[in-house]
Image (cartoon, rainbow, N blue to C red; front, side):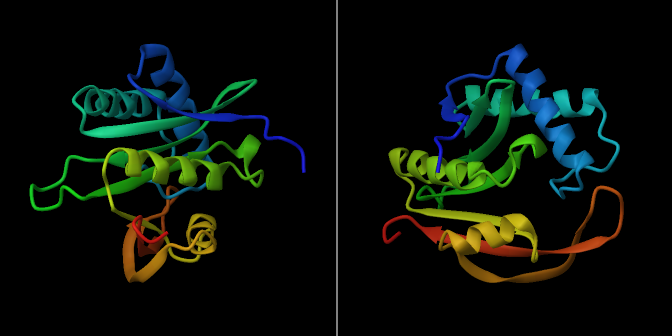
Length: 177
């Protein structure tokens, strides 16, 4: 197997240029049918506004953002949310795991997950929680990576182009993984 054509890193801050690149990845994912909180068509203005809010959270220490880059620029990302109730300082929510369609099925999703788990450990977190479309590509990835399935919530959200989808909740105990 050849070396990946991308690299993953945690970003200490999100510049305007990075906001634009991340917006492009988000738009590509929504265009491709990913149920990631946005409806189709996702305008660049809405995508940029979302990433600007995320940038504020990174600056405030409320979240961590990891990005994957290849020769064409940003091709994937994942977030850890630390801004949780005070009785949950040991955990983080993992969200917005996005992989551009040009690099899917090359191991980038797994690399982003491993990097997110490592970042969570470095930040003193022992438990991660996430949700994914039931039976979707991401859910299959999480199960392959050993995340524990909690259960399904029917009719939880809409697909970007309409139609209800269920979500499956997962957790990962980082002390034993």
